[in-house]
Length: 140
Image 1: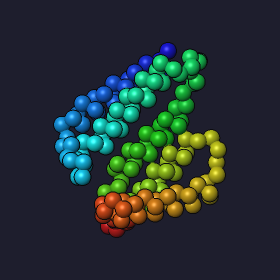
Image 2: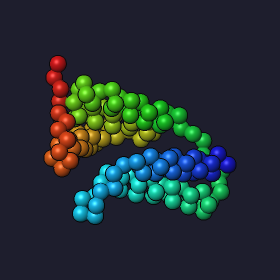
Image 3: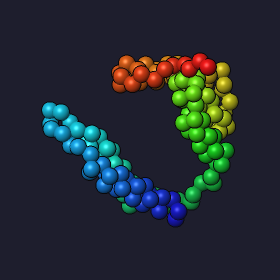
Image 4: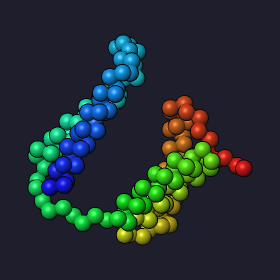
């Protein structure tokens, strides 16, 4: 039952984001403003969550995995706190390692290699594709 209401909660959050996005500029068709993407994303969130609320199968909820939840929460907190201090590359790798600690399977050598490649990809996307110059490392 709680899972059903979580879909409604997500729909309410999406509706609130949609409402706040209405204050952004729409722009023109040739030069789209900053309101279009948040409106599309929040509208999709509302539609998907309402669809899931109505049509999702009613099943017994799975027991919560506190370890996974705490790992992902700690990972997000570490990223927020360290990205300005340590730079993007070490912060992404550390965040991914902390989030991976919540899993039951242990393939750390493969995952560390994946996290390093992924962090370089994130840095390239932010630096060159999005033109947001976030330094890869910050040395003291």
